[in-house]
Amino acid sequence: MSETIAFVGNLDAEEEADFLAALAAALPEETIRPFRHLSAAERAAIRIAIVANPDPAEVAQLPNLAWIQSLWAGVERLVRDLGQSGVPIVRLIDPELARTMAEAVLAWTYYLQRDMPAYRRQQEAGTWGQLAYRPPNETTVGLLGLGALGSAAAERLVGAGFRVSAWSRSPKDVPPGVTGFSGAEGLGDLLATSDIAVCLLPLTGETRGLLEAGRFAAMKPGAALINFGRGPIVATDALLAALDAGQLSHAVLDVFEVEPLPPDSPLWRHPGVTVLPHISGPTTPRSSAAIVAGNVRAYRASGRIPQAVDMTRGY
Image 1: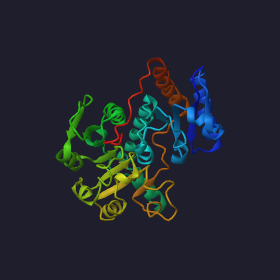
Image 2: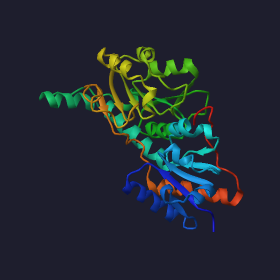
Image 3: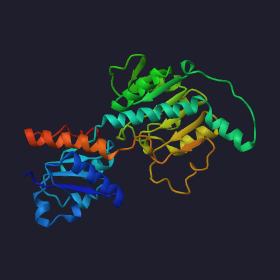
Image 4: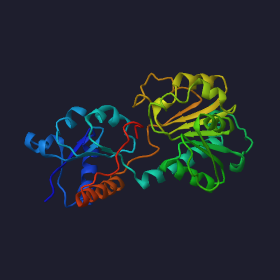
């Protein structure tokens, strides 16, 4: 019998139950128990923790951890809160997440390409008017980030007929039909030629505040922004100023510096902003449990910890 695995999370009761049930089904040979149900002696023996928005103080009470498995793809909070512990953190790399994110990128790209914000404004004003149609092959979508999520999104967009560019920090192979950019100069070139810019970047020291006034000023006039990466990558005040000035036409935002978005945020009421409640790439219990199960079984078989987050890069 393998030793117990700790589940450390800050989830509501229903969500926790769903994840525990999925993990139990995917790993019937393991015992997975919530942190609060573990005695002090049991906590001292834990080698693996599966975490979802964990309290760092609880993780600190597991002194003999070999590694931490995150149930989320984004790990910036874990790196911030737990990175100093030296315990390897393994992020969730889930093909289903890439599929759902690519689906969301395509859906909201269509929303902007087909002028849905303008039609919404016309409805509110009681105006009947048909706007000129802009086909996908005359619309350039620029992806910021070319990891698993960006590559999947690029393939969906190319398949839908869009002109697609993608930027990464360093040169990468790009999917067929995609124009690649890299480095600081490449980012400027991508932004200057994109009708719709889509941010899928992780939050790191280098990407925090990356999209600020200077970047917005360099964008194609009237371009739109989709941010499905992390909220602090976008400088909110600069974004609002660019929208008010007409430099940008619209922004679809699914991630924010503070979540849930505070009721007094000007983003809620700005006519040039569509606010989404962090739903572009949901983590599903069944698919994430399957990934976690594979990692745990590989570790049990070999003793090797799965590929962990690079604490220097932050992902």
